[in-house]
Length: 84
Image (cartoon, rainbow, N blue to C red; front, side, top):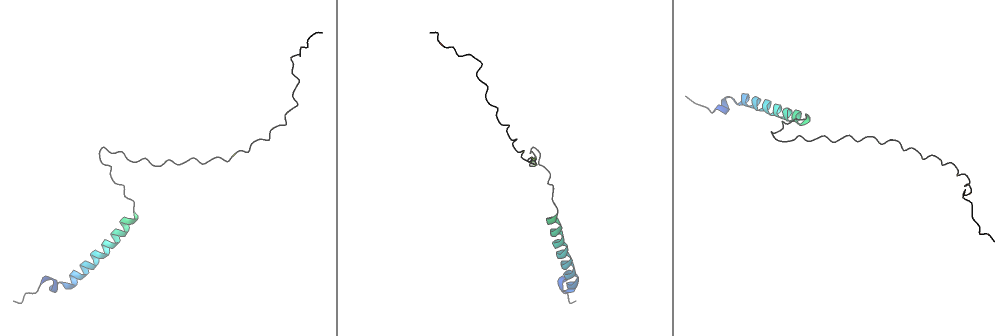
């Protein structure tokens, strides 16, 4: 009996299987690279807090135009002058 190695007898099947596995591996890597992964938290660890969203700054309110100052009133206290 002339025994041949396994890879020679089933060379085409092995090539098709290897090609299919490599294509599925490449597609699997592409899909896993594009999907976010939520890893489970280890016991005793605190999950990170998300960054707070900053409040939008309100539009600056322009300063009101100040009213013109009225003339100052005279001092109500009388001025004492010495008697002659």
